Amino acid sequence: MTTDSPSKSKLQKTITVLSDALRESEKKFKTLIELSPVCTFLNDAQGNVVYINNKCSELIGVSSENALNLDWIPLLHPDDRERVITEWTKAFKSSQCFSQEYRWKHADGKVVWTLGDIAPVIDNDGNATSFIGTLTDITALKLTQENVHERYEQLNTFMEAIPDPVFLKDGSGRWQMTNQVARTLFQIENHPWQGKTDAELAVERPKFQVAHEACIDSDEMAWKAKTISIDYEEMAGLDGQSHTFEVRKFPTFKQDKKRKTLVIIARDITQHKLAEKKINILSHAMEQSPVSIVITNTQGDIEYVNSQFKKVTGYTEKDVIGKNSRILNAGKTPKHTYEELWQSITSGKMWDGEIQNRKKNGEIFWEYGYFSPVIDDLGNIQHFMAIKKDITEQKIAEAKLKYQAQYDELTKLPNTRSSSFSKNLY
Image 1 (cartoon, rainbow, N blue to C red):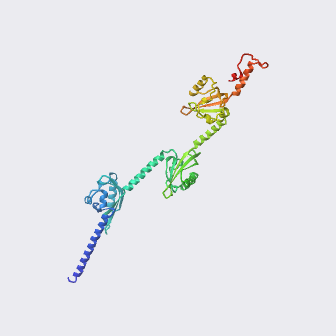
Image 2 (spheres, rainbow, N blue to C red):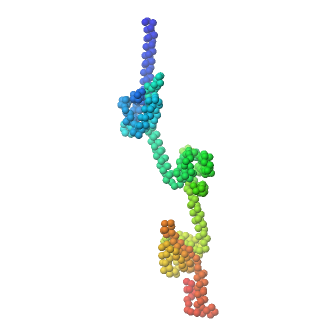
Image 3 (cartoon, rainbow, N blue to C red):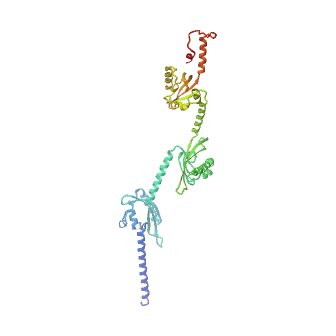
């Protein structure tokens, strides 16, 4: 007994020291957990809550005392409840880790998004004696993600509403977004294009190699321009024919001046170019016409005159554009002639006949004109057009013949009473 007493006393002393150290360690650990900015909780082997720290209590809106043995299921958001219970139960039964994003209904009514992580505490026999978990508040992150998603949807909707092909590329030239028109144009709907550069797509899609490589060069020019640029590119359309596109590119840059995004809008102007060519041909034809051409609005105000008109009348465009066609009226043509002309063209019919007009220098001359309405696709009269030929010399010749018929060629005496030559002409 005497030989064992010192050993027993020493053992008890050691146990006491270890117990005190353990209690001190637990105290420090508990203090650390309580002061931790991380929401921490502890469940027993059956899943019952046996501890939550203050941060966790604040996040969920349940006091530490009320949290013990509390039924947590009603606090879960209804839309997440079934999924969380299923995964949680699976983790507890299999002593596996659990990690899920889900929502809580806070006591004050607000919704809190959390990332919940649980790990089992395994004893020496491999059994889970408890589960320790953390909750990370990701509400702000989720709101940011929702805002980003909402803006993405708004941008996507806006892009889809544009009838022209639209592309959005990042600073490295990778395709990020397109609208349906663009995907149809490049026939890329069923190809994994997102996140790829034109160089990569050119290799993957030989049929469009030329188009993709052209994009690389024009994109680089747009980046270097550092402002909105307009270019014209040729590309095969769905009909297999070459189409001309007016391409507008808008580069944006980060604060450090590095490339950020490139917005591209392409408009098929093939028909516009063809129409423009047709208009140029018609314009040249009208300008080079040997007869006068005048176009007015529906009130008779002059909007266009060709070169022959200016040559015949002596008026310049500045003299007559915007002026009413009455500026040419010499007052010699009967009123009923103008009434008949106007009645015809305003009812959608053509009128032709002789009219006497006055030149800029006051000289009166004869014209034979064809007057017609210009009608649009809806059947509405938009303009009036006059095509006129100077027939003054013809009228002089006619007057001369008439003079010769009325006067004796040798005696110059009148065969019958006649008016003067000028009166016959004018």
